[in-house]
Image 1 (spheres, rainbow, N blue to C red):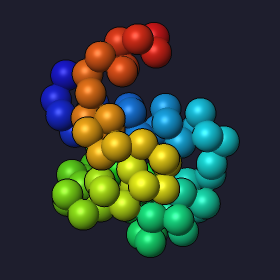
Image 2: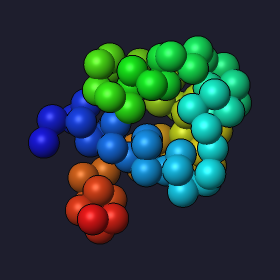
Image 3: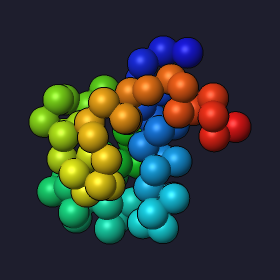
Image 4: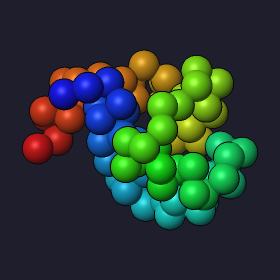
Length: 75
């Protein structure tokens, strides 16, 4: 699994676990909703600043968005 796919899966899983819409997450992370959608689909790679903003909005550490073990454990 590529890092972009890992990030996308973790982002979506964490967003849904917190019952946030893409729009709500985008607002809290100060990014566009369509960008959240593209990140969750693996269309774009996020910058470090974007990863940090998303992690803060989700209440996790940035590295948690990149953990492979998190995906395996949630399946």
